[in-house]
Amino acid sequence: MRLKPDAQGFITAADFAQMHPGVLFVNTSRAGLITPGALLGALNAGRPGRAAFDVFDTEPLTDPNDPL
Image (cartoon, rainbow, N blue to C red; front, side):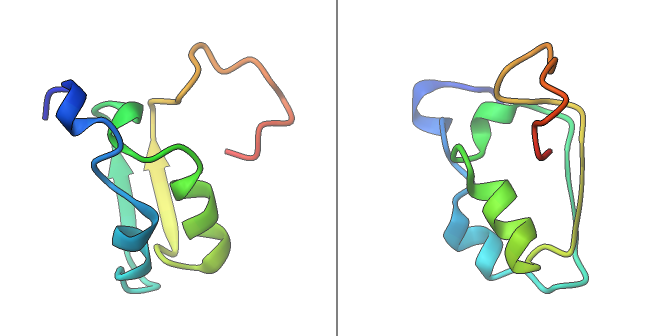
């Protein structure tokens, strides 16, 4: 999916809340497709249960204290 203005924040906290706790969410596309903070909040709530990604809101990721 291309990151166009109408796709910004396409995946929301509500979308994650509907996921099964056993789901592995994978994002190798664009970080901007996810509403800021939604993935971290969802992981803390256990839905999805796990995540794998290689894209971040701020790149390069240099903050060793970043929770993701």
